[in-house]
Length: 399
Ligand SMILES: *[C@@H]1O[C@H](CO)[C@@H](O)[C@H](O)[C@H]1NC(C)=O
Ligand SMILES: *[C@@H]1O[C@H](CO)[C@@H](O)[C@H](O)[C@H]1NC(C)=O
Ligand SMILES: *[C@@H]1O[C@H](CO)[C@@H](O)[C@H](O)[C@H]1NC(C)=O
Ligand SMILES: *[C@@H]1O[C@H](CO)[C@@H](O)[C@H](O)[C@H]1NC(C)=O
Ligand SMILES: *[C@@H]1O[C@H](CO)[C@@H](O)[C@H](O)[C@H]1NC(C)=O
Ligand SMILES: *[C@@H]1O[C@H](CO)[C@@H](O)[C@H](O)[C@H]1NC(C)=O
Ligand SMILES: *[C@@H]1O[C@H](CO)[C@@H](O)[C@H](O)[C@H]1NC(C)=O
Ligand SMILES: *[C@@H]1O[C@H](CO)[C@@H](O)[C@H](O)[C@H]1NC(C)=O
Image 1 (cartoon, protein in one colour):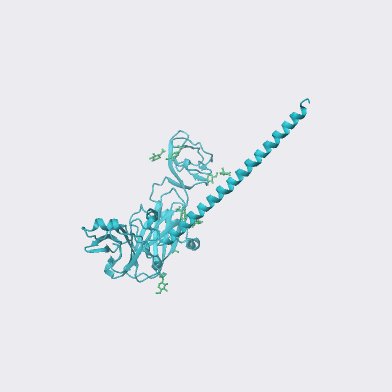
Image 2 (cartoon, helix red, strand yellow; image 1 turned 90 degrees about the vertical axis):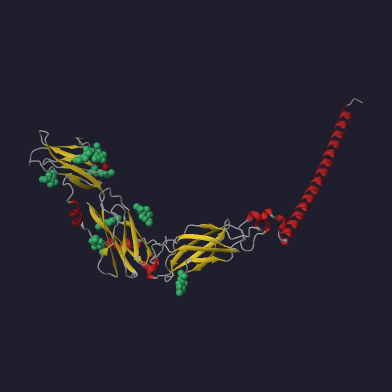
């Protein structure tokens, strides 16, 4: 995937680098209602009845009814749930012997953070945009600590614009050093896990597609088209950084794009096909780093070269199609126009027909000869049979 930096190799490094920062999680969630308890799915979870007096028995309810899961009820009032599943989430309340509510605990079950799928895009020299998805669905409230460091310097924040969307953006008004480490740490009540990916800024540079592409006819010029576009908005034009553009065009229906390269934001197609509608698209690449990524293609626009209104009709009907340039483009036309086929093809067709006729004649001759022979044999057989029977009859006749 060009332009994306996914870092499977980095994951091994992360295994070593990830630090268990459980203290962070306790800081973050300690403000929450004290009676929310988090547990790890599949493990055993122990619920403690806070208000229980030592030694006095308590009973537990789940979502208001008796606890129906496999559990252990200890004498000191704790409830131990085994092999927890998500249906064991909910409200647990403990009551004393007289039924008085002592405490309610809301249990939430999930997984501790795993590694993340992190990708980063570099749409210009001054922006790195990273986004990620969980590889392990944790089912738990989650925060992300997002940092980056350039050249092993002190870590700085990768700004998260919205806490709901898993993405962050690095803005910097210096030129990027080529080496940038992005550290996305997922933190939830059960733990934390850091995913670190290495971004090669220059290799990953992939501008956004050129914008506002337009194509116009050039009055008086039947094979020209004038194409114009804008730099992508995210490109720092003010910084004077050049982009190069590739423009591609083809007559509608053709499979082959012709191309032009330029560092301008306009170009003239000089060899458009007269009176044909063309498809045109443009893409961009950093002009200084030739191993950086090409942008996606812009939207395709359509345009047809200027044609003289007085001769248009004649031109469109009589203009022979330009076979040498677009060889396999219009195969249908080639068959429609079979009388115009080049002589070599005509010759081979003639040869084929002659061969076919010859074979047909041979087959006819051979089969008729065979039939004749067969009929003759048949007749002879019949004759001999008749002779025999008549002889037998004659013999059996009383003399
Ligand atoms: C659990 O308790 C919370 C608040 O104490 C309440 O909003 C929620 O509806 C309860 N859920 C169930 C299933 O009883
Ligand atoms: C209650 O008993 C269980 C074992 O029966 C023990 O693991 C737990 O620590 C005890 N809890 C308290 C609050 O004494
Ligand atoms: C938990 O479930 C697994 C299989 O799902 C089973 O092998 C294991 O014995 C169970 N453990 C307990 C404590 O029930
Ligand atoms: C208890 O309520 C929680 C939601 O609070 C729900 O997820 C769980 O399935 C409920 N369980 C039972 C047994 O009612
Ligand atoms: C991070 O997640 C991976 C699995 O995705 C796990 O193997 C590793 O132990 C986790 N690290 C920590 C510190 O939890
Ligand atoms: C993470 O990315 C890998 C490959 O890039 C993919 O196979 C996997 O399904 C992704 N996981 C998630 C949870 O998106
Ligand atoms: C990644 O960020 C976390 C949270 O800020 C930090 O604890 C961890 O040390 C960082 N890892 C590296 C390799 O910088
Ligand atoms: C980039 O330019 C260098 C020389 O300037 C050339 O050797 C190399 O092949 C080019 N790479 C690409 C991908 O065009």
